[in-house]
Image (cartoon, rainbow, N blue to C red; front, side, top):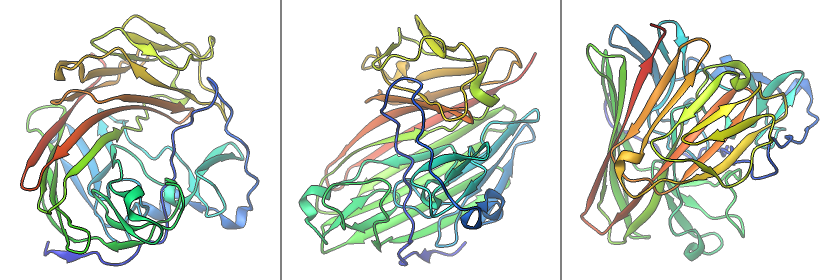
Length: 355
C-alpha cells in the first residue's frame, strides 16, 4: 500500500484508564440513552488485513481516520483482534457497543458499553506521553504511535480527545501471514521525530504470533517513554477457571477481594467468576531486571486453552486489570533514545490448546 498522510485530527480519545479503586471495585453505573448506543459490529469491517498461517488466524486493523480505533491513547498501528486457534478467539472485543454518552465504560442492560475512545481490543499498545508538562496550554506534546497532540487540559487525561496536529505518514505492507506498518514523523517546531515500524506475523508451522518493533529517534530531542501491551484476553466469561503464572513470586500491591482472586506464589488464581460491574486489578511487583521475567502463561484450566506471553526486554512495571469480559496482563518496557538511536523489542505469543 502506498504511503498515506494521516494529518486529520481524530475527534475521539480513548479513555480505558486502569481502575485504581478498592479490590473487586464496582464500576459506577452511568445512565445512558439507548438512542446513543452503536453496536461494536459497526467497527468490524473498518480497514484491516486478515492473516493466517494455517493454525492461527488474526485480524490486524490499519491506522486512519476511519479505522477501528480513533482515540489518542493507544498506538494506532496494528491493533490486532480475533486471534483464533482451534476455534478459541483470544481477542474478541471486550465490549458490546459504544456510546459518546459514556465516560470510559459502563454496564448497560447486562453488556459493556464504552466511549468510542475506549473502543479498542487487544493486543493494543500504549506509549507514555512525552513533553506534556513542558508543552504548556495549547502547546504540542508527543505520543509515539499517534503523533504530535495539542495540549488542551491543565492535567493529562487519557480520556480527553486531544487534537492530532501531526500524525506523520504511514506505510503498510502485508502478505497472507504478516502485516508491517511504518510510521514516520518529523516535527521541526518541537524537535521530535521518529521512524516506528511494527510487524505482526504468524510463524509458519507454529501456533505462534510475533509482534516486532523498531523505533528510531530521528529528531533533535531525546525520546524517553515506556510502552506496554494491553492484552485484553478473552478466554473465559467472567475469567472463571483462569490462572496467570509468572517466573517469579507475584506480589499484588493492591489486595484482591478474598473471594474473587488470590495470589499463590507465582500464580494468580480466580476463585470465582468476576461479576457484572466488578473489577479485579492491581499493580504487580516481584520481578527482577532480567528479560527472562517477561514470560507469563494465562490458562483456562477447565478448557485447556491458554496463551504464553513473552518479551525480550526487562520489565519496567506491570499492571493487572480485569472485568467480567476480559483479563488484561500489562507488562511495560522502558525506552530511552538519544537522537539517532534505535530500540528494538519483540513480543511472542504462543497459543495453547487442549491436548
